[in-house]
Length: 245
Image (cartoon, rainbow, N blue to C red; front, top):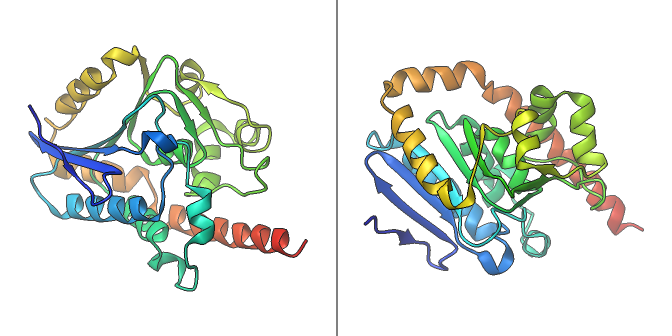
């Protein structure tokens, strides 16, 4: 049985087994909403995985009924913002994520909201339970897209469908997520962990150098990072506008 390590607050679990690093979001009481400490921990885990030749692929999973309810807005608003974006926990994580060139796979159950959806656009394979519900209600929250999704989502589904998700809060079922190209495959909830592990074990039989080259060629990291910076500028403008009302 694989033993998991955990972060100081227990919100992240991780274990390396046969070349596969599994990282688990473990804050089910908050529907796995990601706070600053979790962003910092995720950045460190991915950076270490990038450097470690024994890590061939990374799986991101979650405990509880939901995958991720997005960024913890309360935490985000209370976090100090005097440091440059790239030096903040979320900025460090997104920078690391953008340039991560090992296979990254997501196992998604229940709801994936906001960042819970936009993070999936960085993953190479996304397996979703049949009951999964994916949404990014940025307009209703008075926010702009984030995590490079303004670049990645239209490239994946087209501008009209991207607008449907961002502006009209269209909630995608697991089946729709596959049909729209956001997810790879739907799986029964009880089979999710086993299917993902089996698929990843088959994937990493290919040479790591070849998998890394494929990722670098098909995912233009500089353009994704440029989109992230533009998104943060828009988000800052929207936030300042709210504060001035």
